[in-house]
Amino acid sequence: MKPIRKKRLYNILFVFLFSVSGISLILYSLNSNLDYFFTPTELKNNDIPIDKRIKIGGMVLEGSVKRDASKITFIVTDYENSIEVLFNGIVPDLFQEGSGVVALGVINNDIFYAQEVLAKHDENYMPPNLNLKNDS
Amino acid sequence: MIKKFIHQFASPKTYLFQVNRVYKYIFYFSLLIYTFSLIWGLLFTPEDFVQGNSFRIIYLHVPASFLSQSLYAIMAIASVTYLIWRVKLAAYLIIAIAPIGAMTTFLALISGSIWGIPTWGTWWQWDARITSTLILFIMYLGLISLHNSFSNFEKADKLLSWLVIVGFINIPIIKKSVDWWSTLHQSASITLTDKPSIDPSMLYPLIGSMIGFFGLIFCLVIISSKLQIFKREKTKSWIKDYV
Image (cartoon, chains in turn red, purple):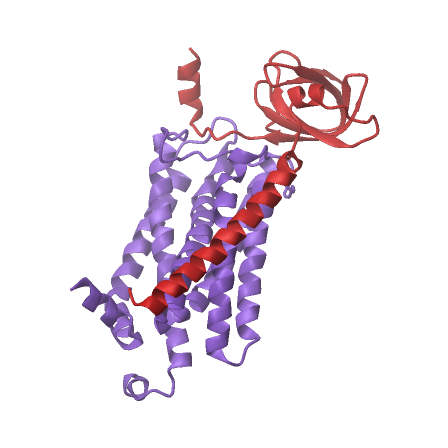
């Protein structure tokens, strides 16, 4: 490589390295602020003010969903800690026991009052008959 | 040998002739593969066990997202080539790819939103994956308008290359966003290290659609780069002979 080209290459590496370290520092300092939701365990370790709107996420505990007219209650768990969620409204079609959920709302006395409930889909894609085969 | 080949290929004239020779084959081959995979994926693949039929948008969403990031990576390679070796063709490629990258990113965002409505219950959320992809889309638009704002092509090319290299940091962030932070978007179904968490009956048409879509977009890049060559070399005598 000719010296001038070598110099250009070093320039590029230098600029790229600096931008990488700059962005890494920003991302590192933002850290958990970039998280989309709190898990139940993180909720327990953080003191969250009563009137602050937050998102929580986890799995809907099997057998915990109770429906009463338009009200629905269920338990969100990360299989270490869990929290009870109360929601008045329509849940997405893909909301079901044992699958992922994200809820937006406020927390009060260890009960999460949700204003919005979203279903979180996981990375598994399979046909229905295959799933039955795996279960049995 | 290789050096000679690269030197020849880097001349816009040789590039044009070589590309014209293979264009037809790439186009028909990818069109065939993509159509075949789409028919396979849309009609002959079973439904997903929770998502039902709505999962089938994967045959557009995944190829488009994959291309939006790969095209940026190709732009970054072209930028380095241009800045170090001052290969003119590389500079033409950068600006030829940018609008196509913007298009595929837009497709990825739109198809993801359409899928999000029945699956998540929302079409837009500011999670790390979606936001970083939106940033990629805005970056593409910014690069295009920056290049258009210069009347001096050489200055525009140099500035564009630097910006592409600095912006490349966004690509690994998009890729790893679902692992580094909690997101609404699911993590990758296909990885290099693990067994794919997508059933083979859905995976094969997906791989076919990715190959086919890649080829079709590659054809678009060829057309767009030819346009750049005509635009930038219009005063050269060989262009007049060519046309």
